[in-house]
Amino acid sequence: METKTEKNVHPAQGLLKEIKKLRSALNNRIIIDRNERITAFNKMWRLEAALEACTIKLQGVGLVEAKPAEDFKIGESMMWNTGVTSKVIGIVKTTKNFIIFKTLCANIWGDWSRAEEYERRLKKTRLVAIGD
Image (tube, rainbow, N blue to C red; front, side, top):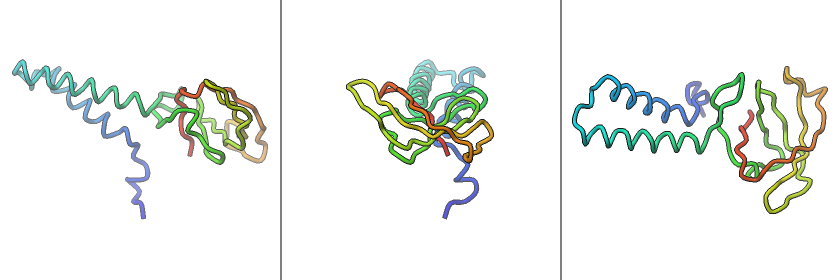
């Protein structure tokens, strides 16, 4: 059983805290030794690269966990800017580089009773936010 704090914590939050801690230490000259500073910079850059690989920033939402479009399966939700979500209800076509999904999209208030079907063409490697 998940506790309330575990459910709401994004996997990237730990990375963000570590990056902020390193940035603060470097800016406030807490790490003085040259070799330690170089090590801290390298660690910070590796953490930022790991963060970019698993998250995207959506307008009106912020940092959200994401995965490549080709990894989405029928029944999963995608999230777009302003928090609008759409459910994958089918895969229409796949090519070498692209995938076409048939999606059911709720309106901006999350009302699924008036949801509409759309086809969405995405590059397979594009990062797409994972909806709830």
